Length: 190
Image (tube, rainbow, N blue to C red; front, side, top):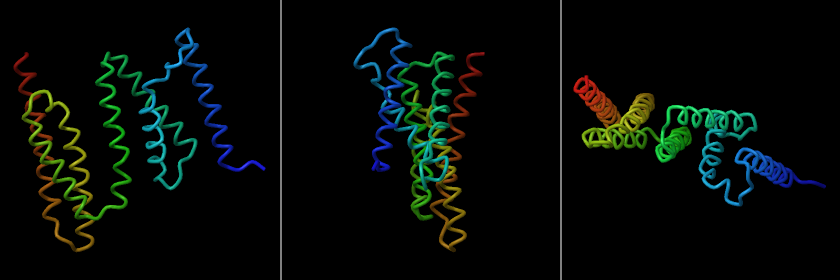
């Protein structure tokens, strides 16, 4: 009698063999460390595959869609000649964005408000640091989303909304600062 765990291990091993054969054909050589660096991609695909259907169960279709989206993102970055290290950082950002639904489901309005406030503070401070300010808009957008959800949940539960409001305001300011700096740089160049 075959148990469900054995079938999943067999399917995983079969998929690994297919990927190994595909990569060997693509590279024109068989190397033992050819798949190095794909571990983070597998983790991102598993997390996003669960995120598409609410983490109740990870389905094969949602995992395939997540793999397709990650491959399209990688191909897009390769076409616009983004370096490998920047692509890795952007994949980590996608991974953190995939964790947001898990965090939001089990979090109280107060903890979401605090998270939004912290992200707002980090985005305001990071907005003034050269080179870091190009990435702080991501923190600001996530801070706006968390603070807005916290305000809505706190208002429904008749709880105070001060922390969430402060997080929302700081996140909006943290989004405006890099935009103004970008406008200044573009205006200075032209």
